[in-house]
Image (cartoon, rainbow, N blue to C red; front, side, top):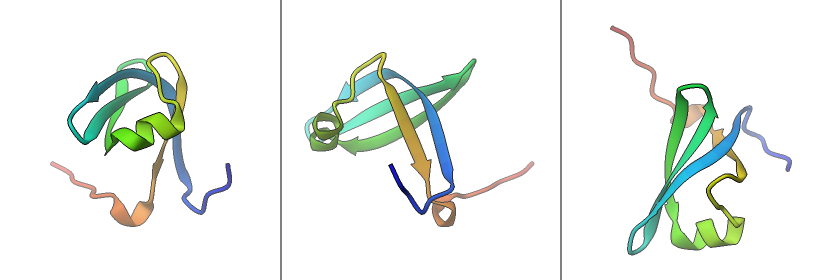
Length: 69
């Protein structure tokens, strides 16, 4: 998989909550760290996502919001 994005987080799918059109996918990155993404049900099927399967969350830096206290 070649991508221009530099932020690739790899983990294990821990849940897929399917809605009418979109699914919420949670990927555990290790320990207590989980990333959640909303993708279409068609994308879940196309990617063959299943609980327990390895998946990658790719974050394009221009779409990240950073905050601090």
